[in-house]
Length: 372
Image (cartoon, rainbow, N blue to C red; front, side, top):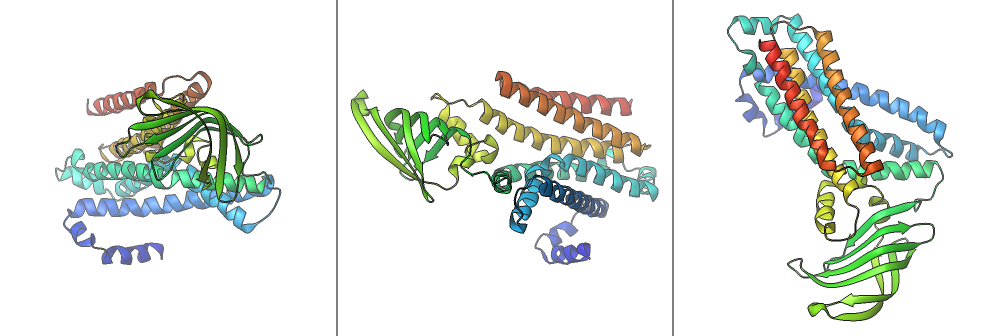
């Protein structure tokens, strides 16, 4: 029923005629793969929803269908990206098993079709999954993480303005940037901040260092008050100043509480903006690199499993699954260990890019071994 409905929508789309220009072999292969992908995706989604609903009933101090839905849905949306490599693997293996069972690949090989040509559509799929991963990290992941955190706090009857906020920053429409290294939401104090006025070319016009400020939270605004500060104006002139800063609330306190609540463009902007100021950028750089590493892994795992499942004349499906799962375990173990090193000892996040070379060598060695 679902496939029939999706098929009708697809045939009415403007891309259908373009799709018909693609060779039949590739179209058939991709169509069957997407059928298996949808089945695996929805099956795991439903299983996770049931598990999270059960978990919610055990941790929640209040019951509300709205909070339950927000928690379950946004938790899955937030973390499903980390399960996608397994979804890709299982759907590829199940599709390959169907093709092998019908001896479709043997017929192609006997007709002189090279294994490398069978892999052509999977290059397209690998790029597609990687691109969609980046779109997800830009538009979906930050909002889902924020909503999931809010639902969790509501279920535990904890206030939303809870804990410590690091690296708070905000940009007003007139190119004024307000940044604080730390906000204590219990004492309502902000520490080590700057108020920066930029011109239309984003060159600094005025700087006000703010060692400490007090602030108040209102439903629609955050108001900072500071005193005994100095304004550095054009020509390095200095003026003693005190002032009040009012900005929209807009959940900014929660949004900057963790780098996970920021989109890719937010992270780029903050890293570029904060290089010349006393802001700890390591967590934000690591979050940005981590997201690109996951996008890379989506590309890699698609090609790797496709090569093992479709690109060889003889295939042991159990071995393909085990090798693919091993790759997933190795990748996420590396991410977990490196995340611990970043948090505990502030290791340079750029070292994590070594995993790209590691998996590139892994693919090359595996491909060379099979072709030998």
